[in-house]
Length: 163
Image 1 (cartoon, rainbow, N blue to C red):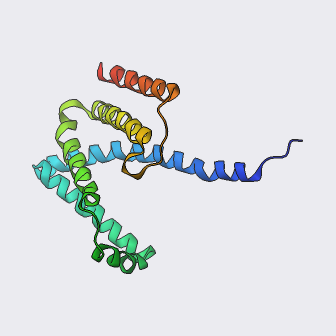
Image 2: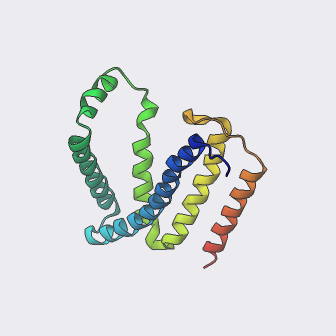
Image 3: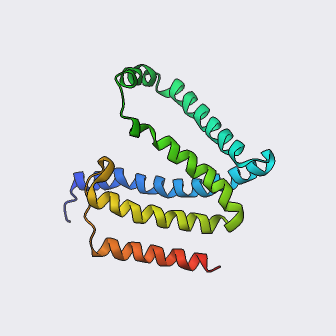
């Protein structure tokens, strides 16, 4: 019997959960679009729906932190007071634009189309971020397999858009 490299097996087992979680997050994003679109209809305003969505999410994170990570607040306050570069705060702006954009656009073109198009944008720019190691990511060079994978994903996007 071949000896199994315990480290490699453990590493693969430990990291495989992240792939499953990433897939589930994708499902969650599609559900979020539908729920936020319904909230828009109920409130009559896409910005109000975005605001409520962020407030509920913020409340959930505060409750989580209070229950499971009480040290979070005392650990982070000195970092905030110490000064953080302005551009590091902009991620929340992108989140707000994403949510508001999804709420505005989904009723017009459908969930599958908006997810496919936003995914195409994500994958193409992710390849740029990885290739150049931008925003602090480790570098993962663009190669033929990554380009082929992106092309296949873009082809899938085109097929989805053809309704």
